[in-house]
Length: 122
Image (cartoon, rainbow, N blue to C red; front, side, top):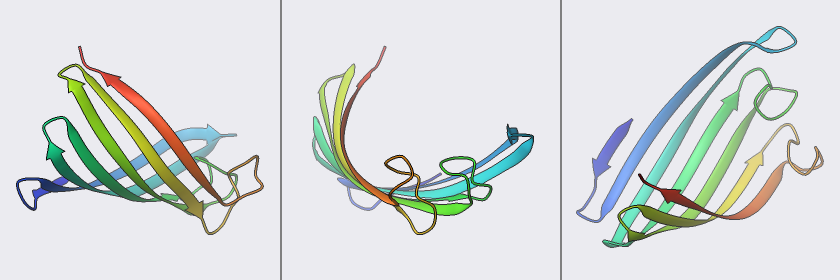
């Protein structure tokens, strides 16, 4: 992971993931890797805005579909921290791939999602 403070309110993070699983499907091994970029802007102590861009390569077609492919996502999120133990994160996300059709029961190669989650710290 690489973290760089661009200004006192603007932060960049680059993450790389590499995964390997033996006997992932019918005795077949699986390997995948990704690069994830985050750009976060601190609005105030309770709010920040975040942009994320990710590329994931599924070499063996075991993560999302039945054939190898590259998967991409871009998302915009707001992070609200009303207290030290709670964070609420709404997100708008677009996923796509140029190859297989893993979305909507195998009929589409893209999807748009609106999501929200909460993180409780204890």
